[in-house]
View (cartoon, rainbow, N blue to C red):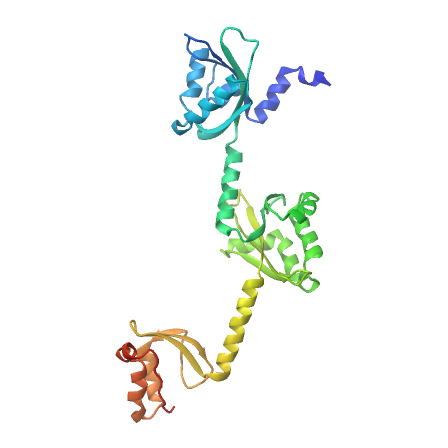
Length: 345
């Protein structure tokens, strides 16, 4: 078994793919710090040759982000004290710009000339970007969502950002989000909602809606416990043709549905009592039509008071004009908070 790890070339190939370099640092009193690096480490340092150990140390140390020197020093102190030590920090690569690095090391007690620490240096920039994206997604959606997934429209793979504990086994059974969603629909949603929910398993449909600048592709449904739920698909913060990742988010909708039902109930009640309901801005002299079930007036959703007044006054006897206009006189509302009047149309 151990023969597999004796070939240093193959070991280096694995480390190169993992973007992980190996190093050793010697800290001897009265001498400059020295770093010895393998080939992967040299590449991660942006070096095309092996410099002197002193130059190698400076190439690494001088490019640490200035705000992270205290954290790096604490990590070194822990390693010197024979503790497991690891630290993450931004590092200025001479060719790639700012990258994010994870370093860890242990003390080599066989070294007798002073202090020697051996460790690794891993480029975790991609991982850091993913974590940032996950944080941005949660910030965008808010805390109300109990299930959040990042899904790839091209190959169907997915990443779990947040999921309820009772769905853990289900998510572990699939590597394709479309198959996972189908399983979820069959297991959780009531049957009458299956057709509309199954549309969301079609990546072509989701992509088409996003390409048409639809901000969210949503479906409302009831689960088998009778609760209202919603599933939403929306583009990830870095969505593009080359990065076709979308967010699938699940949240409860009982409160929102009840609110909408109350609004509909109130609207029905208003329409049964009143022919015309509007909101007036007496400063801007504009109206907003909330409800109108008549046919005498040609009203838009919004408009000017002059247009409204002109239409209504044209339909009523002239002797009622003053009473009608008094209802919309701002000075009258300064004296009383409620006004009414009778006039004929």
